[in-house]
Length: 131
Image (cartoon, rainbow, N blue to C red; front, side):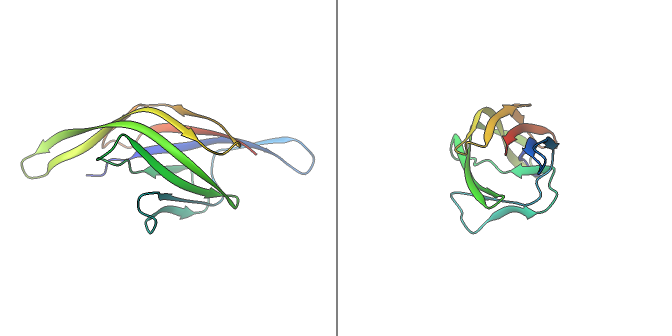
Protein backbone atom coordinates (compact mmCIF):
# COMPACT_ATOMS: atom_id res chain seq x y z
CA UNK A 1 0.00 0.00 0.00
CA UNK A 2 1.47 3.33 -1.07
CA UNK A 3 0.86 6.37 1.11
CA UNK A 4 2.26 9.68 -0.12
CA UNK A 5 1.32 13.34 -0.27
CA UNK A 6 0.62 14.64 -3.77
CA UNK A 7 1.88 18.12 -4.65
CA UNK A 8 0.69 20.07 -7.70
CA UNK A 9 1.89 23.34 -9.20
CA UNK A 10 0.30 26.68 -10.06
CA UNK A 11 2.92 28.99 -11.57
CA UNK A 12 3.49 31.96 -13.80
CA UNK A 13 6.48 33.47 -15.53
CA UNK A 14 7.15 36.27 -17.98
CA UNK A 15 7.71 35.52 -21.66
CA UNK A 16 10.05 37.47 -23.97
CA UNK A 17 7.35 40.09 -24.61
CA UNK A 18 6.86 40.65 -20.86
CA UNK A 19 3.46 38.95 -20.68
CA UNK A 20 2.57 36.67 -17.78
CA UNK A 21 2.27 32.99 -18.79
CA UNK A 22 0.57 30.54 -16.44
CA UNK A 23 1.55 26.87 -16.27
CA UNK A 24 0.65 23.84 -14.15
CA UNK A 25 3.45 21.37 -14.94
CA UNK A 26 7.18 21.36 -14.32
CA UNK A 27 9.30 21.09 -17.46
CA UNK A 28 12.06 19.49 -15.40
CA UNK A 29 12.30 18.78 -11.68
CA UNK A 30 14.34 16.60 -9.39
CA UNK A 31 13.15 15.89 -5.85
CA UNK A 32 14.99 13.95 -3.20
CA UNK A 33 14.48 13.43 0.51
CA UNK A 34 17.20 15.16 2.52
CA UNK A 35 17.68 12.22 4.86
CA UNK A 36 18.49 9.91 1.92
CA UNK A 37 20.55 11.72 -0.72
CA UNK A 38 20.74 8.76 -3.11
CA UNK A 39 16.98 8.36 -3.48
CA UNK A 40 15.60 10.64 -6.21
CA UNK A 41 11.83 10.78 -6.08
CA UNK A 42 11.20 12.45 -9.43
CA UNK A 43 13.36 13.54 -12.32
CA UNK A 44 11.25 13.82 -15.46
CA UNK A 45 9.71 16.41 -17.76
CA UNK A 46 6.11 17.69 -17.96
CA UNK A 47 5.29 16.65 -14.39
CA UNK A 48 1.83 17.62 -13.17
CA UNK A 49 1.98 15.90 -9.76
CA UNK A 50 4.83 14.99 -7.46
CA UNK A 51 4.46 12.24 -4.86
CA UNK A 52 6.12 13.19 -1.58
CA UNK A 53 6.79 10.29 0.76
CA UNK A 54 6.58 11.67 4.29
CA UNK A 55 8.75 10.17 7.01
CA UNK A 56 6.91 7.95 9.52
CA UNK A 57 9.44 8.57 12.32
CA UNK A 58 9.34 12.37 12.63
CA UNK A 59 7.00 15.36 12.30
CA UNK A 60 8.95 17.32 9.66
CA UNK A 61 10.08 15.91 6.32
CA UNK A 62 12.47 17.94 4.17
CA UNK A 63 13.05 17.62 0.42
CA UNK A 64 15.60 19.15 -1.96
CA UNK A 65 13.90 20.27 -5.17
CA UNK A 66 15.88 21.37 -8.21
CA UNK A 67 13.97 23.06 -11.02
CA UNK A 68 15.21 25.50 -13.65
CA UNK A 69 18.74 24.90 -12.34
CA UNK A 70 17.93 26.30 -8.89
CA UNK A 71 17.72 24.27 -5.70
CA UNK A 72 15.06 24.82 -3.06
CA UNK A 73 14.31 23.13 0.25
CA UNK A 74 10.70 22.15 0.88
CA UNK A 75 9.57 21.41 4.44
CA UNK A 76 6.35 19.59 5.33
CA UNK A 77 5.21 19.53 8.95
CA UNK A 78 2.94 16.56 9.63
CA UNK A 79 1.73 14.14 12.26
CA UNK A 80 2.23 10.46 11.37
CA UNK A 81 -0.35 7.97 12.62
CA UNK A 82 -0.51 4.22 12.26
CA UNK A 83 -3.55 2.80 10.52
CA UNK A 84 -4.37 -0.89 10.86
CA UNK A 85 -5.08 -2.38 7.42
CA UNK A 86 -5.46 -6.10 8.12
CA UNK A 87 -3.67 -9.03 9.73
CA UNK A 88 -2.13 -9.95 6.37
CA UNK A 89 -1.02 -6.42 5.45
CA UNK A 90 -0.29 -5.00 8.88
CA UNK A 91 -0.27 -1.23 9.38
CA UNK A 92 0.20 1.73 7.10
CA UNK A 93 1.35 5.16 8.24
CA UNK A 94 -1.07 7.94 7.39
CA UNK A 95 -0.27 11.60 7.99
CA UNK A 96 -2.00 14.86 8.77
CA UNK A 97 -0.27 17.88 7.20
CA UNK A 98 -0.14 20.99 9.40
CA UNK A 99 2.12 23.31 7.38
CA UNK A 100 4.44 23.44 4.37
CA UNK A 101 7.03 26.04 3.44
CA UNK A 102 9.92 26.66 1.10
CA UNK A 103 13.28 28.46 1.22
CA UNK A 104 13.04 29.80 -2.37
CA UNK A 105 11.88 33.38 -2.88
CA UNK A 106 10.20 32.31 -6.15
CA UNK A 107 7.68 30.28 -4.13
CA UNK A 108 4.78 32.55 -3.25
CA UNK A 109 3.05 30.03 -0.97
CA UNK A 110 2.21 26.39 -0.47
CA UNK A 111 -1.48 25.75 0.08
CA UNK A 112 -2.77 22.69 1.95
CA UNK A 113 -5.56 21.36 -0.28
CA UNK A 114 -6.24 18.21 1.75
CA UNK A 115 -4.41 17.74 5.06
CA UNK A 116 -5.13 14.00 5.27
CA UNK A 117 -2.52 11.84 3.53
CA UNK A 118 -3.91 8.35 3.09
CA UNK A 119 -3.71 5.56 0.50
CA UNK A 120 -6.07 7.36 -1.90
CA UNK A 121 -4.36 9.38 -4.65
CA UNK A 122 -5.49 12.95 -4.03
CA UNK A 123 -3.99 16.42 -4.15
CA UNK A 124 -2.64 17.39 -0.73
CA UNK A 125 -0.41 20.41 -1.46
CA UNK A 126 -0.34 23.07 -4.16
CA UNK A 127 2.86 25.06 -4.69
CA UNK A 128 2.38 28.61 -6.03
CA UNK A 129 5.48 29.78 -7.91
CA UNK A 130 6.43 33.08 -9.57
CA UNK A 131 9.40 33.15 -11.95
